Amino acid sequence: MQRATLLGIALLVVGGLVLAGAEAQGRELLVNPASFTAETASEDADSSGLFAAAAPQPKPVPPAPAAKGAKPAPKAGEKPPAPEAPPPPPPPAAPRPQLLASLAADRLAVAPNMFGDSYFSPNASLLVFSRPAGVFLGSAELPLASTDRVAKFAENGNTLPHDRVFFLYNHFANALNVDVEALPAGPVHQSLDIDRFTLGFEKTFLDERWSVELRVPLFGNSELNGPDLGFEGDRAGNLAVIVKRLLFRTETSAGCVGLAIDTPTADGFQARFLSTDLTVHNDAVHLMPYVGLLNTPSERLFFQAFLQVDVPTVGERVDSNDFFLGPNALGKYNEQTLLYADLQAGYWLYRNRGAPWLTGLAGVAELHYTAALQDADLVQGFIPGPYSYQVGNPSNRVDMLNMTVGLHAELSRHTLCRVAGVVPLRTGDNRAFDGELQVQLERRF
Image (tube, rainbow, N blue to C red):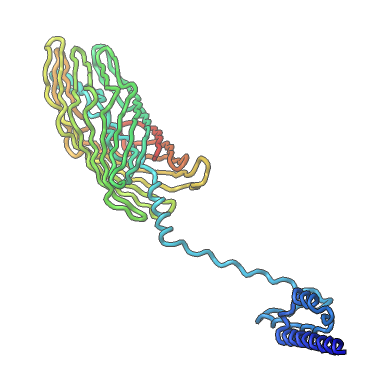
């Protein structure tokens, strides 16, 4: 009896504890319905399978309010509204000033070199006179040691210093003219074409503000062999050294100064007139200071201008060796001081830096003016017989104007190919040749 009573009391106590736990769990679910999960229900079922079905259910959570401006969801059976067109993309941002400056500096750096006109004019002529009247009978133009001033800065020149190697070819039509009457073997009337090949390189230093350039010219045939008159020029011309200093550089313009030096590395010039052998020695160093200006006002348009003075330092010795009179020192022939003024205008016809082989093509037009700043010198010579001769410039002061028209092609960012033609705009003594063809190849680093 007592055991049954104790057992009943124990059951009542256990049942009360179970009911109290179930009631506490129900209050928690009512206070926080989101805390009821499948794991919670599973745990409750495992701990008290008897009361799992009686546990209160969580209340549904009301939907969140729609965002401001959002359209309500379509009802059942209604077609959803057509999607609105996306807003237009914002306009592209304006290039940064640093980017604009970089593009301007790039078009300044790739501005084409000037072609030049390769000023070709004989530094002297052999003038033939009759004796004793002194009547002028004609002249033969003499190709002296370097034939022309290859240190002229406008010849494939650029205001900006560059690291580069280059090859230049120049063909001069009717560059040397011989027109002499009344020689014993008959008159001589002949014109010679001249071909010139120039190898060169330029190297920058001191943060690309300075550069030094070397040019080595080589010549084709420049000789005439007649019975009474003949001459021959050296196949190797004078070595030219050009020093350049960049004065300023902005986004669209640059200026420079420099000095070109034409050194007397070629041999002297040999001529023959009847019984006399004539030698004009190559003694003079030519100093040629210059200034240059480059301007690129737009991405396609560019201008360039150079001004240079050609000053010979000493005269050239003139010697003769006559069959009857023997050797004789005739004196010194002083070449004239010359002024060069060169102007270039060009326009990029095509630019595409990403193209595989042709990245740019520009049309170029140039004007080149050459003027003598002093009178010509004369050296007198005599030979037995009815003739005398002089070495000098019969036209005295030259005043030449040539026009160059060409195409500048970029085969890549570093390889250039250029072709141009030069036409003299003056006639008579102010016309050094009838025409010139230029081909220039350059590789930059």
